[in-house]
Image (cartoon, one colour):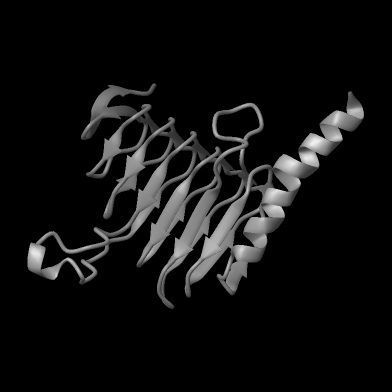
Length: 189
């Protein structure tokens, strides 16, 4: 059984992690993360990892089938991930300007953070990139699974964002927020 588990680990995890390292093209990467899940680093900008950043969770959905995608699209784009951050499987962050994830943040499975609209909303301008506004996730935040955070959002310290929420506006510190769009439903004591 041990041999079978080692073969499974090699074929379904370690080789996939290697594949996505080879496919990564972001040249401005600072720090390292502990990889339990494949990580694809893209873009011309900077992606910075603090100390003890974990990518992937073994006993969680999408472990064998998905990967984490971080893109700092332009030369001045940045993604900054603080210390002691745990990012579950199938996470996506795309920065045209800047995404900051503070210290001691927990991110659930299948979450997305994007600091831009990607394409203009007007039909005749959809080939143009629309404006971006930085996203800041402060210290000790917990994002549940399937959370989407959109441009310009600041999430305050110690806040919890409920599963399936779409965060379109900033959320204060020390609260629980949930819904689409996310709204404060409870204050934390």
